[in-house]
Image 1: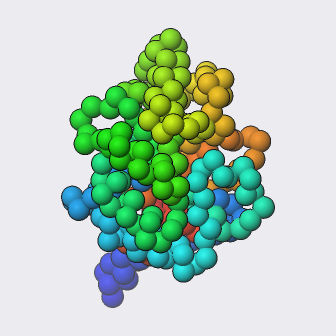
Image 2: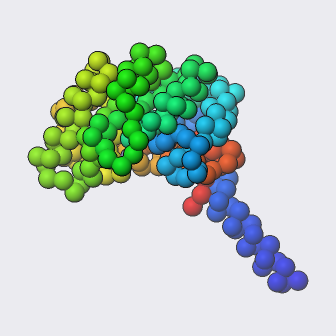
Image 3: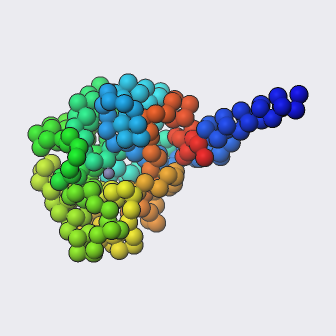
Length: 246
Ligand SMILES: [Zn+2]
């Protein structure tokens, strides 16, 4: 009997560790900034979500009456409730093949952070970027030139990576680039200043949290990382509480 009780208790603890229903629900007036990377039919991972799962998540957000914003819209929409920003880092080509189709199908926007000189991924071409930009469904931000960890670069290199990526994205899109994403979510106060001085109006991090957009954090905005391996209950928990597991 005691053994059954212990086993049952362990099962409950394991469940609650992977389904954090016990976390407090965050106010729906706070923006949810979701972080993704690639969209493709490759194996689901922290970096890749299948188009089928992403579509289910978009349908869920629409059904729950979320307003979809581009990141640069955030400062103008601090008064509305239930707003969500879809962000995709690095500039994977899969975001043209699959994500772009979903954005057009559901008429919702997203923000893609480009890394113009990134190595080792199949990246968006300049014509794909132009096509997505022209559609009005995609806003492009900058994510350094080479996906450098800014905290491991000297200040001169860090400054160049930030400024040059803004210029490169502007050249690719033909319009101003207002938002920056810190690669690996790594940065310090000096990098925040560099991003500000470069003329960006917002910057996103990988800090997992749901927070108000206010004067304290336009350059250190938290995001909710959405792995391609989560189910819809875990997606609901992330949206409502900021995290689904310990
Ligand atoms: Zn990245």
